[in-house]
Image (cartoon, rainbow, N blue to C red; front, side):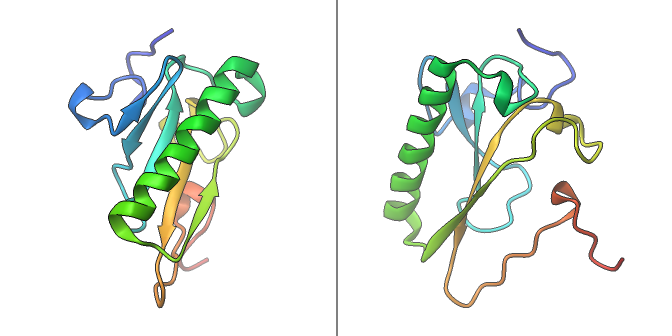
Length: 122
């Protein structure tokens, strides 16, 4: 099912880094570091707990593929891998489950933003 107002349902085919039958890897539109990407299921689903076993395995496979590709391209020191579950912070994209893979580099502080419920100056 595709939602017309969902940014993760309405991606450009040219932006796809890789894909399989159940999901795609896309560059994050508002990256927190070089190479920041998202893994999304093709089906519009709001929660990790609502994806099917097959979708979960395919998303895991894409996450591993993204990690390997990012290691080759950017040589990060590590990764921050996370997701919000459900419509947590009022962001429209939060209604389409997605996994962030954020490369971490030596000497670079990861500054999370309001997408993660973090306020810069509370």
